[in-house]
Length: 475
Image (cartoon, rainbow, N blue to C red; front, side):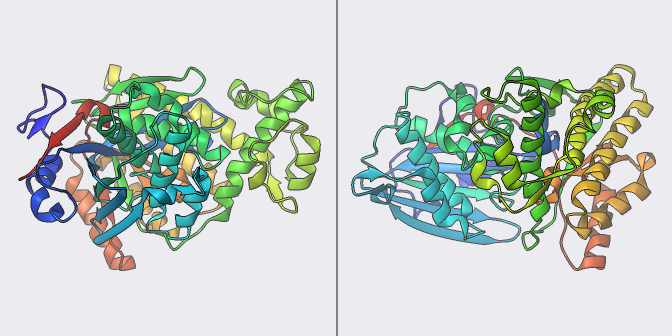
């Protein structure tokens, strides 16, 4: 085996990647051809610790990389076929799909990325397939990827269902970009990833909110929080190595549960920001969506809460806002959207994000556990405020959170909140010290109460760029 970075060796590969490579010939011999290079990329799962719900109008999004990962392998073909095999563990699933590059075109014209994605949107277990094809179309449209004359073989292995909150579509796109760049010798810097969410996004909301997830997949570092500032378009890290602090993820399958209020929240959030912008600008100016960042919770109560409507009907909003609304297609004209409570949540959440990081810094500098208790309380408050607006996404989380609260700081559990409001079945716990035995007991009690399995996501690992691309082949 060989690799693209001289410092990577068989001995320093992560255990999951080394295991994947060791059994590649047996498990993927029917997909990959012998005696031709195969390129392999590892992308860690990431926890959205805070800020992901208000990313389009606020500043900070905080992610933490986990040990669990998605591994993607790609090999160039000599024909125009694309063969994709995915291995999903827990639950065990194997899919094989075959497409032709010609499927990207209709009457010699490149098909729209959104159209390609929608073809797979009804297949909930493989909606990510449409994302791969849509991403290819976007890369070709933007002249980042040349028109392809050869297809490729693609294998994806993940310990978690693709497309959930920890292995996001952004992680798949990150791996796809890096591997295509290698195979087709694309002359684009890796950090062009900064611009890719706009190319890959299916809609305006996704364009803004997916950027932090894409950056985290590529640039995260083991045992460090990744903090993305939207205003500054900048990444900072907070080193938690040897500090005893751990962020633990839990995954519970809520795929059968849909929460329409979560979708409404995102639209209401953009509406609130635009309505405030409209009071400060001429009607011809477009919003910059910085208004909520610059309003403190005190200023909101004193000056803004009575100026923003409790709710607004979609048609009334569209008639009121004269600038182009990029998320217009998401708005239902006859529907009422909550505005005031959503705006208040966003402003509070923005300041909670900053307070959470300040409290972590205070603990790291002083080792004062009271600071860690206060940081955990910020997570709990974020969760409670979300539930007050959108309700409890899933009662299953309540079962776990109640057990966590009973254990408390004395046993190493400081706070918890659902990532993405619970929509992806992922929650984040702030813990300290050795909690593995308690996690096993919680999972056992959860199984006894619900007859469902609870998966813990623990440990930490580096992002795709730091891990590098490994090149291998078999005879």
